[in-house]
Image (cartoon, rainbow, N blue to C red; front, side):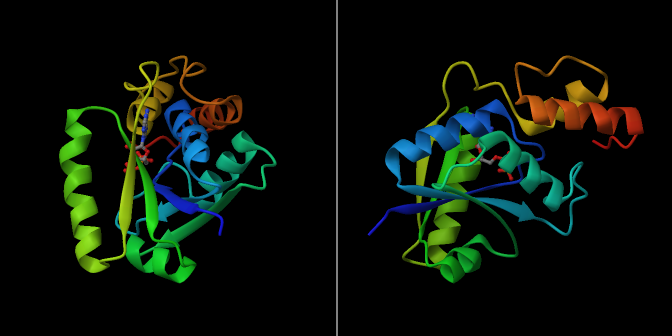
Amino acid sequence: MPRVCIYPGSFDPLTHGHLSLINRGLKIFDALIVAVANNPDKVPLFSSQERMALIRGAVGQDARIEVDSFEGLLVDYAKRRGVHTVLRGLRAVSDFEFEFQLSNMNRRLDPHFDSVFVMTGEDYFYISARLVREVARFGGDVSTLVPPNVRDALERKRTEGVFRR
Ligand code: ADP
């Protein structure tokens, strides 16, 4: 049986931190479902379709990676997909508290559910999608933080003047 894991997140937009996690996840699992969370309460910079397209564009053709999106509870999505393990990244102690709560809540909702945490590499611990949006919004250089297709998409958003926080 291939070991499949869901890697959920906002990916608004995909960063080198996310890509590093995807690559490291593929060393542990046979296949990954990168699942873009659609939160109806948040207005993202990129629509979920755009976020999925940016992820696909950055990872290229790789049969081990599926890009999908979901709305609602992660545990329900995971059940629908028949997968009970998720991959999450830890950047700093501040991530830990939230992730600890989240993984325990998810296990309470589904006792079969488990989370696998991967520590970020030292080159990426400071990268967050929120900071990338902030830097790009003011025309800062994000080329070392995100893949080229995401950098171009951010630049288009900036020139279109559609940046939000
Ligand atoms: P969310 O904000 O909805 O949790 P993100 O898209 O920010 O989703 O992140 C998804 C997952 O990727 C989270 O587990 C997060 O900790 C992890 N992640 C994000 N950026 C990095 C990074 N630079 N290094 C390692 N993990 C990261």
